[in-house]
Figure (cartoon, rainbow, N blue to C red):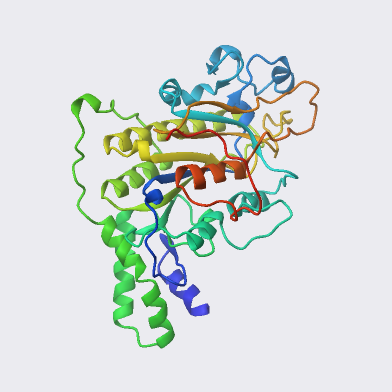
Length: 395
């Protein structure tokens, strides 16, 4: 165990690999040809200022300093709208490819960053402790096809999250760094004499398989000019860079089942307005960029994007023009096969003072929808109970 940790440490901060003990994958149904992209909003995004009940007097009462003025809200219907920084998502909404999920949470919520994100990423109950991410459990019982470069790719974070505990996952900053680290592993294996280290390096040989796939020449997409997407949005920052890295990987023809990208900074206990506006603008512009690039590759209809975070924020603003840890939250699902619209329940703020909001959608319902309706896999034994799927997807 020590040697493995030392080996991974030597591989450098740009690469972390987790592999299943048995790498002989059986061919699986073609469901994993459809890509899942998880977007982690690290720190706990404030859902009430993201999907805004702009007609509610109680919203104004609870947020006199940080509430978004009604004229600025991007209206989705007569009751709720998006934060004004998220205008890049409006074309997806108008094309019915954006599902807005209100009141997402779980029973007996935990307001610790560490514990609550663990609950989300293992899909456990609040009083249950699991050692594997929910995707690792899925891929162990229902593996991806042998020809895939990896089960998943993780960008903008060194944490494997839902891929922790056994999935064949790759953490990378960009494909070039990944390829260089893979060459280092090959060189170390060539000079290895220790039997234990040789075994470790043999297992890590999967790195090189994925690296070779990432280094293949990028083919020019064949898109009918009539179907060509508009010019990509001017997205900038680390989130956009991660989006472009993912799109480059996919354009190479590399096959993976899942990608996770983390956008951090949402723990807005003070001076929330400018911070959240910047982050939500990055999020919306990045998602629009992803849609644009994957549409150009002909992959948008086979891509499903889902956001998640450890928790939301409290309805009442605090004394520092910020918000404290809360419970139910707003999230997004988007893609070419998504049935756009509003799901869940708009927060009922009447009578709320310092309390939190109940959840309307259990996050495991979203996961069950992904596993069964998106990938066509069996979710019955994955989450320790039955969770009703939501009608979020078109065939």
